[in-house]
Length: 77
Image (cartoon, rainbow, N blue to C red):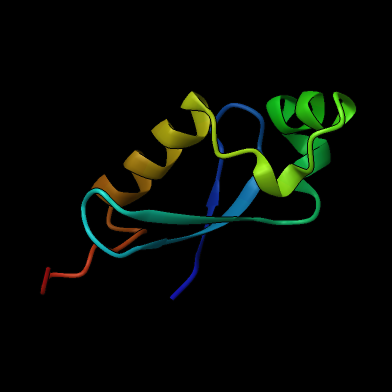
């Protein structure tokens, strides 16, 4: 199940799903390309937003969502 996670630094909203403690799927929403300064810089440089993997601030926000129970990691892995 995709769970919304908002970056604590820039406010970009992405959809996340955890498959294991180490495996996270991140789906960028359409407005994230303009909200996130890292994605916006990559897009301006000619790189498709879908090819931008992540950033440290978003990673921190995803980790916080897991710790706070807002993003669940399957127990059966």
